[in-house]
Image (cartoon, rainbow, N blue to C red; front, side):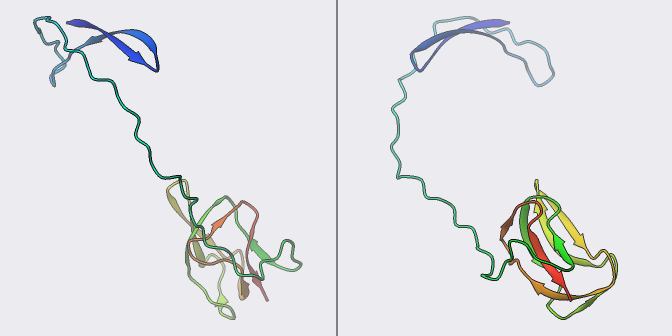
Length: 136
């Protein structure tokens, strides 16, 4: 059964038609009657929003760097760092976990190498192409 409702939003009046459906998908027969008026909504005041705190990178993060580096393939948040400076890694070994669009992405070594400096920390937000770590 189609029911008509008059809705008032921000001073503008809207006429809405709705069909009530049961769980089985069949319409429900409801006797139409007067609808009680709804009390107006009063705005709630809240404290001023606080900017979220994002961890900052170590002070030595290079804007540009020479030599072999691993760069962020996409923007996201560093969840885990799986290696340490000076450790040897093999090709395709996971180096860190980068969360992007609610998915955890393993960032892996492109070749056998030794980790030089790590420029990110857990929970740090990175942009695409930011330097994550270097190889020595």
